[in-house]
Length: 132
Length: 132
DNA sequence: TTCGTTGCGTAACGCTATAACGTCGGATAT
DNA sequence: ATATCCGACGTTATAGCGTTACGCAACGAA
Image 1 (cartoon, rainbow over the protein chains, first blue to last red):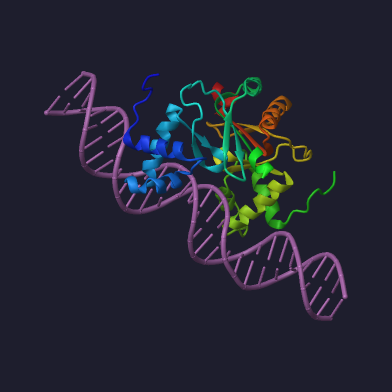
Image 2 (cartoon, each protein chain N blue to C red):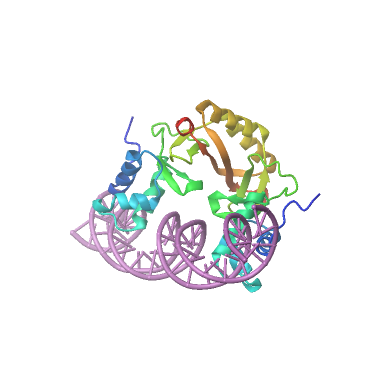
């Protein structure tokens, strides 16, 4: 319930663009959408994205080189999050599963592997697109 | 125990490069390693990679834009495979976990989401690098 | 003040992937 | 045989993603 992070102007604009979007955006798409607000170069976007990732306010979707606003920005108990990415409409659903996390860390521990970040991305077709 | 797929010359060379490597390679690294064997353009590599992915002989690591030879090329019962990627040494371990797969498909089914491909990549530090 | 740190702006560059051509050679059918 | 189709190939160019390197401005701590 506090100002968890003081965002700079650029960071706020990038987060705003992602929140306003109805799906994931690439860095260059964000750049285009913010050009009339003064953005000129990719780096301006990437620097803001890096911070927002640090703060846990957004996520990066590795398999499509895009970014989304976090669906649960208030709770930053972000363990390993999973994403269901529709290849038809581009919509993304964010969820987490304790069992999955548990099994993956178990498997990591077996190997003496120390995880830092876990990527779980399910590509497929969402309910809406299947119905259509 | 049969010639499961008839590979073309290019496909064999690309697969050879990946098998010979001690870790994942980017498409452009493959290109460089095959230049003296006649490769000149990225597309030659990407076309071969596409086929090898189709055949299940290699995997793509989405989070590092690289490719590895499949660790179990003979059995193509590739469900969802997971990768532990060491950020220090670049080594990759490939494994699969039935429980993880089961939970993820359960979560997908709940949402009416029909999965086509699942990406699971754990970034971190491997046992060897932790010991060092 | 001086010095580090952090964010910002710009330009240039490098890496990743695909589009759009045209060519060649093998398989098949008539 | 020859016409046709199809899959792989080669080349050039281009699109899309991400970083390096530089310098400047603002702010707070010593």
